[in-house]
Image (cartoon, rainbow, N blue to C red; front, side, top):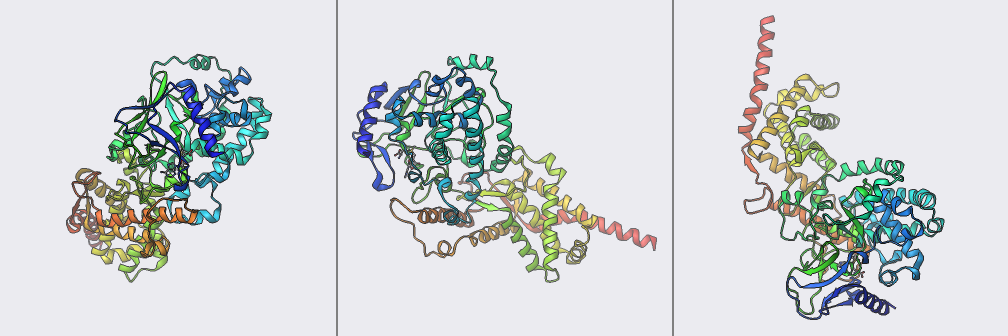
Length: 587
Ligand SMILES: C[S@@+](CC[C@H](N)C(=O)[O-])C[C@H]1O[C@@H](n2cnc3c(N)ncnc32)[C@H](O)[C@@H]1O
């Protein structure tokens, strides 16, 4: 059946595409745990066209059969967001089965839950295996189910008047369609100046439905904030207008990445979309055959380009006979590749990172304060550290002066760190401030004793003003000189060490060995690979931070603690002197 479906699909492709090179074949890679894939059966030159199809052969809101049901459907679908409408279009095509012009394409798509390993299909026990990876916070089961209710209880039966589709779309099928789109769809840009009859239609649209968008948006906004740091590595910049799906394999600079667009097969999270399709410059689309390419962040050798009337898959490297033709689904670490696509790369992705949680930073500083000052009680340290985080979080100075790249502040739930020693500036500045307060306490224990005693009642004005002054001075040092202090580096490494210790023992202690070759891994094995890669990233931080000049990311210089402390303490001492002078005068 598998082979027959491949063959029927092959024939369909040959009949419907404008160009199909005979230098590759669709092959069965199930033994390697890769499903179908494309293998070169002859040498292919760089820039050779592998295949080409016109825009009407892809499946999206413009070409879907559900549009033919009722005239109004087109406008209704255009008023939804990309995820909602493509889910409906794909589900309808699936529902009509043999009557769909895409039937041979559907027969090679994964349409049972067993076909998926993406995290949406893992049960709670299986997800436990991924603890303490930050990926667990990004699974998004709840928002998927909210969308499901909205589609089957309202949009499909009431607006599209298609009760039979609402009946067909069980929760299980919904998850399959959503995951299919997550792992197979492309965001296909409109071609600039492309004639788009929908746009005229949209202007007359009476169906724009604010309720739908509002319903979904509360949590979408929350999610956006939560992901704001994630986007820097996830690179889902799907709204720019280059007429090709870029691979970004040669572009690792953090700054470039932020501005860059790599809108290849790289679906956005459906929780995050808020705009109706009519306002977007692309259509989320299913692109037959382009989605048969597997992905490899190191071996990517082909790119899908979006031209005016057609889509063209081009070899962007020479490919030797027998080699697999690979796309890249995004600049993602293994944890994200697993979450969205249900596989991992060995030994790792080219774009690994790990998350450091705020809770680990708090715990580390509590330990630092309690182990260095034997006079402080546990409850006092907790209160003190909490006070510091709150003051930093609520700092008006930081709100006004932080650079744009830190627009969510420097106290956030988690911070990404990268294997080459690159650390987000938010984390660096936060640890610099906390460390400077610690150094100040160390240099004037008498003062700190007083401060820590009073913290249980109420933070003293002295403490509040010193903390605010430290925030300002640290920010200046960091912004003006790209510098942190020696002890800040030490504390960052301590945080990283504590983060590593949160991982399961068998991964930390060296007893775990990465598998050498890819196979059909079970979920425990997939989890171990993800955790191992995160630990490796964290261990690399220990070695590579601060990054040297030849490494990527902004250069950080390290200054002597004492010098910086002198500057910081000057005013505090002056203030104390003037206070005691005043006291003496009174007496
Ligand atoms: C767009 S499809 C690619 C075609 C797919 N292999 C098929 O048989 O239909 C994406 C899915 O292919 C599989 N895949 C892609 N790249 C892979 C890789 N390097 N190793 C293992 N599986 C891969 C994953 O199951 C992923 O969710």
